[in-house]
Length: 532
Image 1: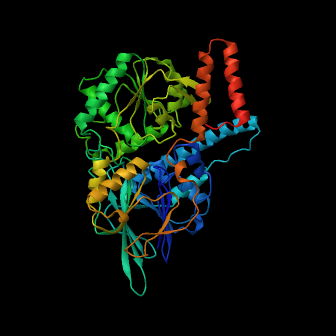
Image 2 (image 1 turned 90 degrees about the horizontal axis):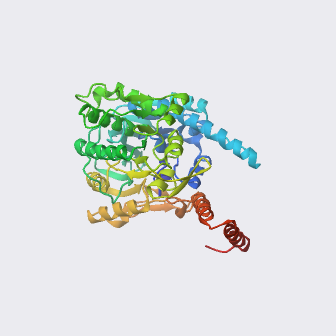
């Protein structure tokens, strides 16, 4: 019984577990890699398994880094069922078509540049037809109900408190013939925080052989995110942005984060704590997601007493490109919510180009920013960035708040894991960066879990789950990327930073003679191959 970590190992995105038993092969999640260009290039490469031999998929939730490569799986031969909750299926009904559309648009733009540079054309990872086939493969499951999913395998989905439809997945696998037993595994998916808007606190079983747990915010503690406290933070940030005089840009994830912001803004407007300024929701995907949330509003927490929480006279949903372009005429006093949450795609990039250089503007980051993304560069204090080939100086105020995080913080993750103890085999810590993984491992050790039973796998590692309870046995396998390439900015980021620095030096030089001196020095360094 082999478990392979085909994504979100040593990094946060690309969640994908591959399990092989004596009777079947299956995946838990099949997500896209996000972050640096080196990491995202894995989305275009071959899977480390044959999709045609995968019998079924168990999906924890709809976020792209967990579901985004399902159409590619279908494109390359997968023909089995995909088991997911009703909420996840409904969200993916428009998220996956949106992903195909974004790919087609970005690849078309890239191929125009490649043609001018004499480079070969690039093919999208998948198309709309692959999306339609993937959606037809879904089989909806209920929470806390056992489902026979494959030969010798059954699964049960538990509320994870993360987004609509999100689940931790309990898996039982019948093993052995001479000495039959049932192996019990738990895949956390993404665990939501306490006091999460819309959802109850996460639940999960115990008495397990193995647990795979996310570590996104391992070692990090956040302030109390109770509703009143969260709205206080939002109110303070909006008031400060309005005082600066420009627009407030909020790069937000289309699913859940956007709806949380709309609900809290609705309450602040209704309470008279904020003037009813224009709020533009400029994301077709987020608008569709908001309609799904409105449909499920009766079953969501925190919406009591807020009639039609996602609609207000000052809320303006801009779906078409033409409507989106009109927002550029607004130079101040508005809130613009647009995707993507990490600023790496979508309409937020156009709004950043129009506002980022303005000293009266504000950009408020409300979610996790993967290393190498534009959002992480802004959060890190970059003075200049490159957007769609254009150099932009950062004049806007950059703010980052964590009260809207969809993830449990370090203490809450540790509490969730303690509730699963004792674990007979091992705890695998995934979906995190080095600092978070290490902090969560140390916390588990302090809670009494032996260090040899806490494993931090790397991308493509393979372990034999039947090697015995005394140790975790790794199988020798090739790895697609070295460890140091997983959770850090890559050479593309270095190149962008270098070009911006060079431009700043040239602009600051006294005259053209001084600029030529700088360029000659750079040319000599390149010709001589000088190191660092």
